[in-house]
Amino acid sequence: MTANVKESYDHIIVRGNPFTRGHSYGQQTKEKIVSNINYYKTSGVLPDWPQVCDYINNHYMKALEKHYPLGLNEMKGIAIGANVSLEEIVLLNARYEMLIWSRLLRRTNSKWPQECTGAVCLSKATKSGDILIGQNWDIHSRLMDNDIIVLLEVHPDPEENIAPYFMLTEAGQLGRSGMNANGLGIIAMGLFSSQDHFDESDKTGQYIPITLLRRIFIEAPTFAVALKRMTSLPRHVSCNMMVATAEGEAINIELTPHNCFISYPPLETDVYTHSNHFKSSAFMDNQSVKDSFKIGSTHFRDRQLERELMNRWPNIDDHSFIDSFKNHLGFPESLCLHIPDKGKEYTSTSPKECTVANIVYNLTTKTVRLCKGQPCLGNYRKYQFNYNVNKDNED
Image (cartoon, rainbow, N blue to C red; front, side, top):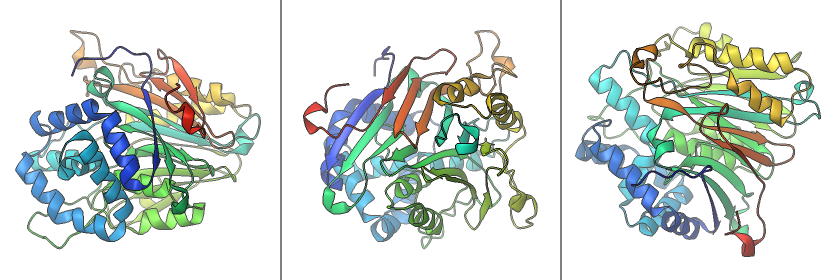
């Protein structure tokens, strides 16, 4: 796929029932989807495709049929629209799990990904009382260089009783972070624990990929229902979910296969940040699971983001919230993550990774601000829900 030099990621609008909108999504992003699949199948970053395909069929398909048939139907639509197999679309939506599996198989000790850093600010912290949630998305630069990322805007069929929603994601995935029109928001940061497991010999284990848990949260009608649905489904890896509602609450959930470690923004500040290590008091007090992440920038990225936000407290708005993500302590492996200059790869433990996007959801105004690339360099675009079907192609 030829690299695209556009200043913003494609804004893809889909409407209708799960299969219909999936088919539209697949058609609109076919080239990106095929490129993404080919990378994961042929680059060597994952186990061999037959092994991955067997795992998908043995451990994900039945769980999706039982717990998330609407999502499975949407993925079937994507597959047909993009002219690829259903297993390949499930691969994209289980990419997070497959990369963890690959590292465990190889016993990789040093090159764990930096993943992401995120924050939420409730009304006490913001100038207008708005609820803000957002993150730097840190991953291999190819997603940005090859223009694989999309901002997906979904308008479900009215009979589904699901509010419209935005999700920032890799083409072919159902979602990574997002916001719905009812004011629910979710961001996520990678976590790695001693409970993460991939037992190929046990064909009975059935799981929902973490990426789909995020979509399931956003599709829920209320905050309470969203929390229950997301945390009760079977999973086999860990992840940090930071969730919030425009009604004025936020919760951070450090998920492992068997636990949910909960923390909240302090009542006196209404600010909370997180990166890629377990930090909740509940986790620190437990004896059943250990953090598997290697010490690195994760242990200062969240603190630097909190410092930046507190320097702007209590007058934080969308723009100063964005500015807080531009911190360069520890450059290039900083909160705002950069690829080191040629010849200086030794200055980073992940020299091919960078911040591929900064996204901010204002849950109060239902506004998305998205930057392609690092927030210190990128151009931001503002998005709101497009309820006019006749203007889907106007961006």
